[in-house]
Image (cartoon, rainbow, N blue to C red):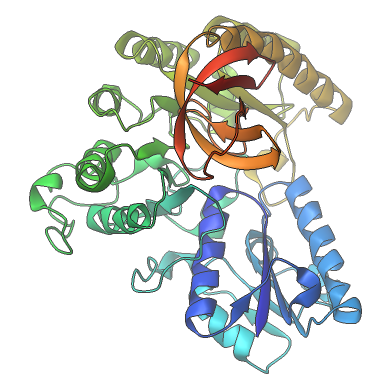
Length: 461
C-alpha cells in the first residue's frame, strides 16, 4: 500500500508518526508525500487544546476528499484527538469518513490496521500499558538534520488546565541504555542534532528505582550509566560520552523542562560538555504565585526568579525560552501585570504565549471568573508586543559573532535557512545564511550580520 501520514501537534507526536512509518516501511508498504497518490491516509492528531482539535477535524475532512478525488481507500485518525474523545460517540459519528480511530497507545498496531479489512475500527489500548518502541525497527524520520528522542512517556503531574495524563498515562521513563542506543543509531546515519523530549524532560527517572536501568550492552559502556542516579543529568552525561565516540560535534538539546526539577546538577552537566546546547526551555505558564497555585504548578514567583538567576550565574551565555498562558480563569489585571513585569525583568531569549483553552473535561473548567475571550486576546497581544522588543534587542547582541549553524533548507539560490544552538526547531526564530554550495544537514560557521525581531542573518565565516 502507498501511505501518506500527516502529523499535527508536538514533537512527541512526531516521534509516534515516525515509529508508525518505520513499521509500515518494514512491512513492505511505501511512503508518499502527496496525499493524492496515497491508498491509505493517516492523520496523527493533536487534541491538547480546542484550536488543535478544530485543526485536526479540518485536516481529517480535507484528507477525506482524497477518497473521491484521489487514490485513498482507507482514512485513519490516530493520536490525542482520537484518545481524548474516544467515549464521545457524537464526535466519532460525525466523522463517518474515518475508517479507523487509534488512540495514543496504538502505534504498535498500525500495520494490522492498514492491512486489515474491518471497518470501522476503534483501538484504544490503555496508555499506561504502552511499552517503549522496538529498536529493531528503524523510525522513518520526518525531519532533516535532527531527530527527536522521547526519554519517557506520560506525566505524573496534575496541572488543572491539562489533559495529558489522561491521554498519555502516568510517567514511564525509558532506560538510559535505550536512549543512548537510539541516539547512536541516528548519529551513524548522519544526524547532527539529537533533541530529547517528554512531557517534562527533567522529571525523567522519578519513576525508576536505583539499579533498575539496564547497563553495558550494544556497545554502550557501563561506566557511562550510573545506576545510583536516574535523573536527566545521567541521560545527558551518558549521551555525551556515547556520542563523543562517534562524532563529538553532534548537538544534544532537551526541551520541556519543569521548573521544579531543573537544578544546578543539570546546568553543570550542560556546562561540562561542549556538545550540549546551553538552551533551557522552561514552560512556566505564569509568574503570579496566586495564578500558579490555581494552575496546579508547584512553585512560586520567587522560586522562578531564583532558578533563572541560577542559570545565568552558572552559564551567562545560556539561552532561555518559556511559554505562558493568559486568560486563565480568575486571572486579574493585577496578576497579568505581574506576569508582564516578570518577562520584562527576566528578558527571555524566546517566548510563546497561549490564551487559555477551556473544555468541560478540565479541572479548571469548574473554576470561577472565566476571563472573556477578547480580554485574553488583548493580554496575549500585549505580551507578544513586549517580547518582540526584547527579542530584537537580544538578537542584536549576536551581530558580529560567529556561531555554528545547522543548515536545514535552501529556499532560493544563494540563501539557506538554519539554526544555531540557541534556536530550537519550529518554535524559535531562524538563521538566514547568504552563501552557495552548502550541504543540507551540515553544520557550518556563520558570522551574524543582521538582527531582526525573531530571526538573525549572516554569511559564511
